[in-house]
Length: 458
Image (cartoon, rainbow, N blue to C red):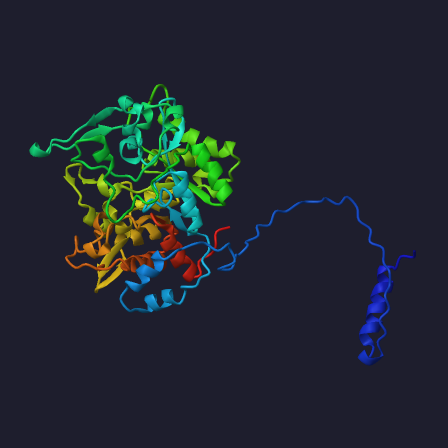
């Protein structure tokens, strides 16, 4: 094969350029390519895959969202939500299953977790406590077995920190009991059954004490409640195709516990995800203890990148170490918080999670983002909030979770029907810009996210 010289190539180009276009004849010429000492480099280019709304598997939202929508006052939001009544509804990370779906299922049980996943929760929570033999299990509190399980009705009741003591109604003395995961071994823990979290404080028998479920919840699905270890929850969540947000619970016993330090506790939780080959991007570890969050950021940066600081600074603040600062002052004056938003960000914290009332206030007869919410966003912090559908009827004010908008602070309530849960959710999503919302009934958050075309969980 003959090689064409550079001069010949240039001459041919000039001739072609000078020709009239109509008379040009294009001739294909083979030209060898000579390469020497070629280095092959592999470059990783991130690819963002957008999943269109509705392309994820359909989820089951049931009749409750429609009930709430029909309870709303006429508005553009109500009209929009009504138009979505036939779905499709799909899994989204905006919808976070708080302890599963504990409005009607015993919390932190297999049944509750499965229900949350079927309702479209893209992320599900296991609160992590430890047993006497230092194994990790899913419980909201280290010492809640007397209200969330049947332990008082078993032989393990004698091992409780505080065995059941009947109430004395005539003298106004409440019943007493406290049973902790650290009172029993893992093997003993797995023999228990979960129940709805409740107790009758004026009970004179164990049976009465265990029968205290709030009227606005139900015992309909409490006939069985399969307790789970943390490792079992990981395996279940993987099989359900949901992401995970474990909360390291504050110990109710003095640490170190039989040589088990707080850092060892925090590390063991992360190690169980590593052992199960769970990708760090599938996990949002969380804690009310800022030291735990900072530990994960420094010692396990791949998991610490999504670590969530559960913000309870509203409950621990003081001015000049003397006068306590009221919670309502904090949401209007976030500069009083210690550490500040900027200091949290400087420590590497990327996500905070306050209760929903911290993010909202009333202005001109409307629910609007609070100064606290604005300060968090200004510091570059992502926000997750808790907990929707955990209160009784909103017509009665909604209690603690709605204190900044139910008249407790301002004297004027912004909520008066159960359907206002959607109004609150809309402000949190559109105006505050939260990343996700914990809910005791994920169908509600799933319905909203699907209707608004939020990204599907992938």
